[in-house]
Amino acid sequence: MSFLWNLGTAKKPVASAKPASPPHFQSMNVAFRRGVQYNMKVAIRGDVMTGKSSLFRRLQGADFDSNYISTPQIEVSNIQWKYKDSPDIIKVEVWDVVDRAKNAVTSPSTEAGIKLEHNSAQKQQPKRGTPPPSTAELGDLGLDASTVNVYRNCHAVIFMFDMTKPWTFEYVIKELPSVPGNVSILVLGNFNDKDLNERKVSLDTVHAALYDLNQERIKEKDATKPNLIRYIECSMSTGSGLRFIYAYLGIPFLQLQIESMKQQLESKAIEAVNLLDELDQSNEVPEQLQRIRGQDNFQQPSTSTLDEQRSTMREAWEAELDQIARDHGKEICLGSADRMFLSRHEHFQ
Ligand SMILES: Nc1nc2c(ncn2[C@@H]2O[C@H](COP(=O)(O)OP(=O)(O)OP(=O)(O)O)[C@@H](O)[C@H]2O)c(=O)[nH]1
Ligand SMILES: [Mg+2]
Image (cartoon, rainbow, N blue to C red; front, top):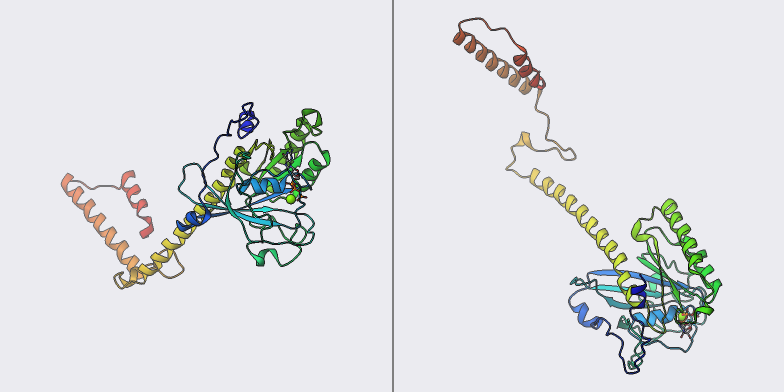
């Protein structure tokens, strides 16, 4: 685990050393021309100044910015994400959630790739205020967690806290129970670039609290393994942990894929029933063997037909017994095997 946390750390002793290049991301436009196959929604939550917008910007491929600008309202941005070598194109709608909106400010929407490493040479800066993609969903003004259900259609939530500020961890503990059981949760202990002495939230505290919350999720929300809380430590400043976050998106994505496959299976089953309905209406099916609409089998044969079949069967069987008796020159009594034969044909009785 610690190996993964260190991935993306730009703290290297060699001044000119470049951080490992991040995965390559195509512009949204090029990728979308091939068709978006999946839409995933990821919400970033946390107390004020915990690094939400820093992660939001990193996910859009921007550098870390040490200047602090309080986010006025919920901001949404679309990024393109890729699962391993899969050819699928996945559009991830990332929400930078604000609890209490200030003066709403909007600017053109951002379309960018995820940034996994700190790279001061890169000058690209996404525009910060992104308008919501769907006004129907977000409303017009006061876009914050008190006016918008941020967990609606959400596949994953990333909670952030500042490990030097215990109250920011308490915020996470307080908010976690309100996350629906079918949503994946990643908790991030941010600011791990800070000196160890400054750390005020111990790993033991995190472990105990998240263990209890996972138990609750299992018992009260029927959460399955992929929807249990996971935790890593990271730094938006150095980029440590960003590779893990990138890979973690595979969890909600795979669940999304499973859901979509289930729906496909259901629709195939419905299609099969409809096709059978159509075929049953065909003139090529003899009338008495046509299935009745709404029933699984075709109509029961009439009683007279059944009686006729029964007596034909009996006559054939008796004739056969006579023949056997003649062949053996004696009367034959019905033995157990004969009785079995007759009982097998009881449905003709
Ligand atoms: N050293 C260090 N600074 C960070 C880190 N993450 C964020 N910061 C800084 O902390 C401040 C707050 O970061 P933001 O990303 O704006 O925090 P936020 O949660 O979006 O804040 P609000 O929008 O007010 O809720 C900024 O000055 C960031 O540059 C980190 O991991 N390490
Ligand atoms: Mg912010």
